[in-house]
Image (cartoon, rainbow, N blue to C red; front, side, top):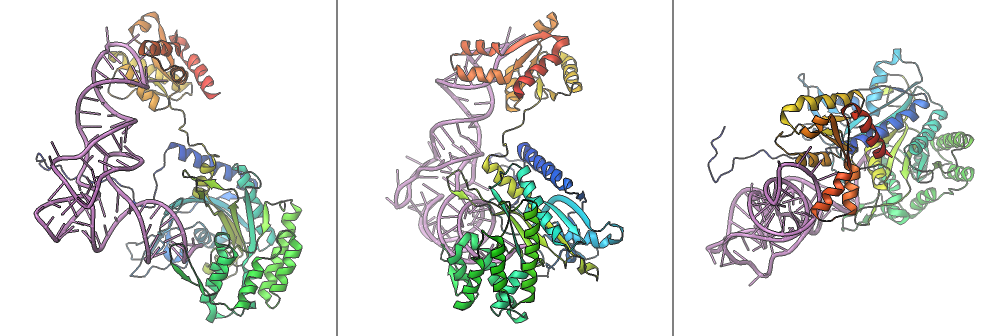
Length: 503
RNA sequence: GCAGGCGUAGCUCAGUUGGUUAGAGCGCCGGUCUGUGGAACCGGAGGUCGGUGGUUCAAGUCCACCCGCCUGUACCA
C-alpha cells in the first residue's frame, strides 16, 4: 500500500468503458433473448439447423483484410499468435461459415442449411446505434444454386420481422441483383479492370439513393457533391448520357414487376451478365409471387447494392419504413436492419471447386435499438425477487428457511444480505429499488402468534401515490397494503400477491 | 479519415470584459421517526472545472496539443 499523505489523494484507476462498446443491463439482455428465440423459431421452421463457430479466426480466412505492418487493425481487430500467424475477431458470420463448410465439406448433408447468432466486431468509428461489438443472426444455404434458395431467404426475413412484432407495411425486403448492376456498368462503358475504381464510385452513389435522393446521386455520378458541413465528395465523373442511364435504371417502374423487369432488360441488353441477372430476378419474383409475398413484404428494388466485395447475384436488404423520433423530436434513421445475398465464390476460395451459397443476416443490435425506440420492446425492469427481511438478527436461520420454501415453490426469493443492522425501513427501500413485488416481515410479535406479515409493495406504492398526506396518514395507508397469514400459508399467500402483480 | 460543435458535483445545467473560498436543482447520506418504501423540514458529504503544456500579477474563462462525446460526411465485409 502506498502511504496516503493527507491532502494528496492516492491515484485511482479510472473506471471507463472503451468507446464504441456498451454494457448491457437486465432489460436489454431480456429483450435480446426474446429476439433471438423468436428468430430461432422462424429459422428452424424453415428447416435450418444451428451451428456455432468461434469469435476468432485466422485473418486470411476472413477475406480481404490482411493486416499490414503499419495498420494491422484497420477495420478488423487483429493480433499475432505465438507462431506469428495473424488472428482476427470475426467481423461477420458469413466468412467463418464459409471456412466451416469448406473444412467439413465431406461430412455435411448438401445443401447445407444452417443458422447461427453471435457477437461480431468491427474496428471503426462508432455512432448512435453503431457499435464496435454487435450481434448478428444469420441463416445460409450452401450448395444450392437455385433461385428458390434466394426467394426463400427473402420470405423468411419477412416472417422474422413480423414474428418480432414489426407490422406488415412497416418493413420491406428489397431485392436486386449484382449482375444487373454489372450490366448497367457495362452499358455505360465502365467494364474492364481499368474502370474498377470508377465502378465502385458509381455503386456507392447508387447505394445512397435513399439518403441523398436522385439529385444527390446525380452529383456523385458526375463531378461530386458538397455536404452540409462543406465537405466535398469527389464524384465518378460520368458524362450526362451515362448519368441519365444510371438514373433511368434507378427510376424504373416499381409497381408493375413484369414491366419493371422488361425495362431493366432493355437497359442491360448489351450485357450477358445483365441479362442473366434480370432472369434471376424474374425467377425470384415468380416464387415470391406464388407464395403471396408480393403484397409489399418482398419487393424488387433496383437501388439495393449491399457490400461491394463478395456478392455474385441476388442481394437483399430489410428496411424499416416507419419513422421514429428521438428525445428531441428529430427523426432517427435506422437504415437497413438486415441484408444478404448470394456469394458463390466465398466457399470455393478454400475448395478449388465451385460451391454456390446464399444467406441472410439480421442485425440484432440495430434492430433492437429500432424496436426499443418504437416501443415494441419493454425497457422496464423485470420484477425483482420477493425479499425476506431480517427483523431479529438472531433468527436469520428462520428467515432463510422461508426463502428456501419460496424458492422450492419456484418463486424468486432472497434473504436480505445487506448490513443486518439496517432497520426494516432501509430493507424495504432496498426491496423497492429491486422492484420486488412484496416483502416478508416477521418480528417477535408475529413469531409469537405463528404468523408472518406480507407487505404488497406494488399496492403500497399505488396507495401512497394517490394520497401524499402527512406521515401518520401515510403510515396508515401503508398498513393497508400488508396483511398477516399463518406461517404455513406463506407460499400460498405470496402466490396470490404475485398473481395480482402480474395481471 | 475530413468538417463543425461540445466537455463545470452521480444527473441536468448556471458561472459577468480573465479577479477573493466555483454555485443551483435533482439524486445520495444522516436526523425529526426503538417495528415499515413516500412527502415535508433540518443538517451533511460530494469537484485534479476532460487531460497536458503555455500566456498572465491572476485562468473554469485566453492560446496550443491530446482525449472523449454529439452532428454532418467518407468508409462499411
